[in-house]
Length: 497
Image (cartoon, rainbow, N blue to C red; front, side):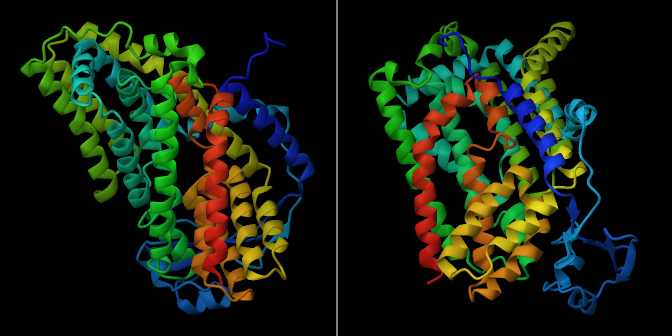
């Protein structure tokens, strides 16, 4: 038994893909009709039934279809994805996925996730170039001296700043760039890799879970529910502060124990391996902090500043982000006077170091494709909406929390979940005399809480970067997850009475 090892992230995802394949044989196929807006001719296109129907882009059309959403939400671009049409669910001929579909799903997933995969690979190349210049060693050494005795500030600062990005513009996939950069800083501060992983991943997760002005969750979900995104904003701000404080205190307590005695670390048996992986063992602290290295670090930092500004203010997405890091790597190569051959060799090797992470992202996307092709996602949504009939407000609200947590396994995209479920779920609030903003809250909190352990989210990819097993993450996170679930349930119950 001692020789048994917890399966790798890739194996876990392939096992999940096999389970989903089996589910497509057991769960009846079904689908809602969908409605998409076409701005070029101001029409709605209703699809999903036997024929596709084009309808006028008016409020009357929405009312006729039982969709309680202002038409302006479509015409001004707030809702840009097809939404589910209430009361249109119908069972379809079963479309079970076989062995061939299971085998092809990782390939389809890698193709579908090419945008984020290329971002990860280019970031890997950039990290390789930075390591070659020696700028990382100097920067980490300087930061370690600057924070000596006050390393806890690093935990508070990183978690809070990343949470700010999560709550405002949905900082999530972009955090993949931070792990190879910030983990060495935490190791140099005499913490373990779990502390760095927690600060980055939990900061992003809590920020996204308690989104305030995030267009990819709060705003699009509120629009799809037919309410203003400012409705319920005070509650979400309160939850953001409470959950962030709980999370930071939890990380600080763990970090304090690790610093007092490294044997308290959940990843203590990997201590030497992780320190070598992130260059702490061979770090050259004798290198002088020259003007050239300062300039390289400035360019490197600016890559992230430009990325954040682009995503939050300029409507950038993966192509623009990836281009930013590629240009940054080239500029750093020029400043560092790295010869062309050595630059290409180092860049490719750095990208190769994150190839395993890229595959994990692709395999996870393949699981989603299996569910879509098997036509079971809408069936699960339909039956979930039926469960809550006749409940009182408090029980209803907490049931919705767990329903959304479960649905997020099948629909891990926050914007996809919003447009597919809100037209179906938000009217349920009217039947128990609570505001529709509560459904938006349960959607965010349910997805956010399950996101912490959801294998189809980014956690497995993040763990692959840090070389930490999923079992060790579960050991670290379960007490915090339990605390956050109880806190959320109490808050939701109070909010509807």
